[in-house]
Length: 417
Image 1 (cartoon, one colour):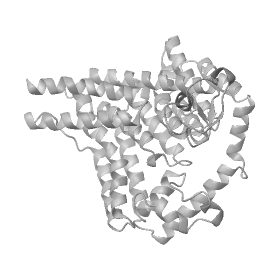
Image 2: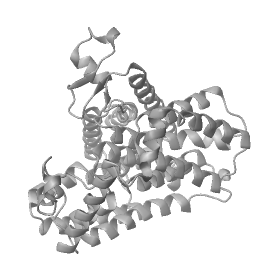
Image 3: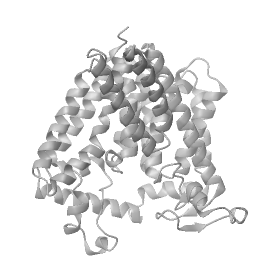
C-alpha cells in the first residue's frame, strides 16, 4: 500500500517537474529533490521498487565522472571542483531515476513529454511578448535602459521580469543563451511531426512558429546555427512528406531575417571584427594556454574563473576574470584536461549510440520515432551550440538536456510491462 502511494505521488511530481523545468531553475531543483526523496522511500519500503539500470549510456557517464573526480584530486581548488560537479554533472540523476519510471509507466512518459512541450511553448510565447513590449535592460538585471511610455508606471520588478536583455529576449531565464539553449530541445520535438507526418493540425504549426520566433528574438547566434543543423539532419534522414511544408517552415524565417535588427545580427556571425567574436577567439586562446599548462587533468572543475586571469591580456582583465570560455569542449579541456574532454565526447557518443541503435531504417518506421528522433536532434543541437557557448556549464541547459535524454533512453530500452 505504501509503495502504491509513493508511486502515485511520484507520478504527480514527475508531471510537475515536466511543467516547471522550462520555467524555473529553483522549482526544478526543489522537485528534483522531492523525486530523490520519493525514490529513497520507495527503496526503503520495497527494495525491488526501483530497478536501477546501468546501460551503455550510464557507463559512458560514469567514465566521464571518474575522470572528473581525478581532475578534482589535482585541482587548484578541490572543494570548488566538487561543488561544480554537484551543480552540473549530477543532473544525470534525471535519467538515472526517471528512465525506470518511464519504462514502467509509458503513459506517464507520454504525458510528461507533452507537458514539457506545452510549458516550453509558454516560455516561447513569453519571450516573443518581451520582444513586442520592448522594455530593455542591460546585463545587470534591474538597470532599465528604455521603457515605452505606456509602461512607465509599471513596477521596476515587473519591468525587470518582462524586459529584454540588451535587446534580446531571455524568457524566464537569466540570459538569452540559456533561454535559446533550452528552446532547442522543444524545437526538436515540434519540427518532426511538421516535416514527417501525413497530416498535421494548425496547433503543430503554431507550436513550431512560436518556438522559431522565440529562438529568433533571443538573437542567440550559436543556437540559430544549431537549429539549422537540426533541420538539415532531419531532412537527410527523414524525407519531408511535402516539400511545400519545408517552404512554409523556412519562408517566414527568411522574411524575419530581412528585418534590420535580425539581418544585422546574422551578419555578425562571419564578422571577424565584431567584439563578441574577437572576445570568443581570445577566450579559446586562453583555454588552449590552460590546456598546455596542464594537459591531462586540467586545473579542476570550476577553475576557469580562478585561473583565467593569469592567461588573460590586460584589456580582458578590466571586466574581471572569465567564468567560462564560450566553448563547451575547450572549457572542459581547460578544467578537466584532454582526458576529460575525450571522455566527454565518449559520454555523448554513448548517449547517441543507445538512441540510434534503437531506431529502424527508414527511421519514421521506428515505433517511438516521435521521441527518439527529437532527442537525437536535441543532442546534436546541444553539441553544435556548444561550439560557441559553454552550454555544458549552464545548469539550466544541462538539466533540460538530461531530462530529455531520460525520455529517449526509456523509449530506446522499451517498456518493462
